[in-house]
Image (cartoon, rainbow over all chains, first blue to last red; front, side):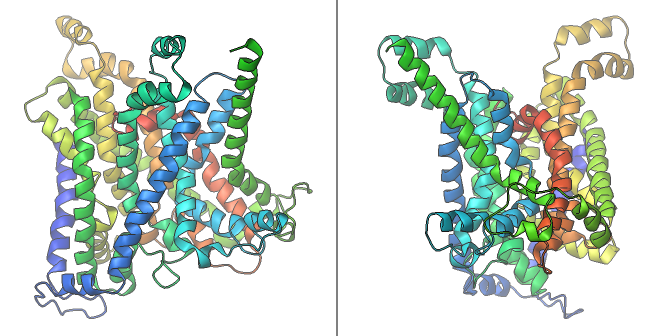
Length: 276
Length: 275
């Protein structure tokens, strides 16, 4: 097992140690040679940046909204296609397809063909109902990105719930039906407890992937207008590769690492049970 | 509940499932249609559904941006990183599954935790290293990065595939005097072929669609399809049909792969927590 473990150790430790080191020195790619010790300056600079709190806030809003938009409809869709019906396999394929779309295609497809305020499909729908089309990416940039990302991750949630529902005890449900348990009661007392673990897994996997959403923002709004759709990942990227300030970017990256670690502690607990 | 009411409910459920699936799939269907339109038809108002299809856009995508170069880069990096990852992971998972020690569990959990490190945390150092070593915008660097980000998933999936092999079979093979390599090739490999194949499939999908690293570490030389499509974000005149054509050929192969590997995809992405 040595080689795999060794490369992963290197992959984990080297960047992390370098990030910590960079975060403590003055390091700008435009000013070569100057690497003086900066103590906490980079952290202070990053935290007092007027974009910092909006970015953290938007990261959290984005995260919770996408989770809401994917888990709830995901369960309902999963239940809907759980029983056999004509064309079920085709419906399944249609449902999960958006998950295989690469993020850059997703972003451009929505930015142009769906959300363009003049020629987009959504604009046509709005006009059909006699409404004024919305300029999505300018007026509601964060919501627009939430829609794109939810469209991609709803299939993931749905697919997991479909898989989990297959192992639901049918006889139990039948027995409950015989005992005149209503649909709501059956859902609340039998199905929901069965889905508790898959729901936890979906939420945590999505948290890990959504904390670092990048392409969808970079391609559509570049974090704007202003900072309205900037998240933590995008802010770090901006400091490090747009402003070339490696020191400040590294300090920001450590915030992202800490945030992700808080999430991962819980995930590791849930998944760890599977090892025994 | 009467029989006919039950039947009606069933049909209503099927109908709503069909409608919702069609709605979710609609953006992709639209992408598909637009790829075969002329640029003027692509922005027609109201949107055109019936038209004479053209293949012009596909040819133009190749001329405008050398599509084949990016497709080659995507293919090389995803296949190479998958093979490299499988080679590294097979030996690791093999010893963990069949010769577990007290630390095996800890190592597996730790591997999972490396997946939690946000990419942006490693971006700055990796960028600086790549710049200093001249590996920026190279296929080698991208392949290595893809291998590393997928390695924990590969080890976990192969580990669970190996774990499913009944111990008695291995015992029997050893009794018959099989050596380690022989045991591996003649017993373990045939039994886990399905697991290894689906792991590989999953890795192909993940690498092909990877966007964070390919956007930040490559440009004209080692760019993958994900990066090529990003270059369409700055409009140059009418370009929706060309964008659609490029997108369609970028996602089509991997979507077909994805349809076949959906089950493994779920198992891999959830580290086996949902089967």
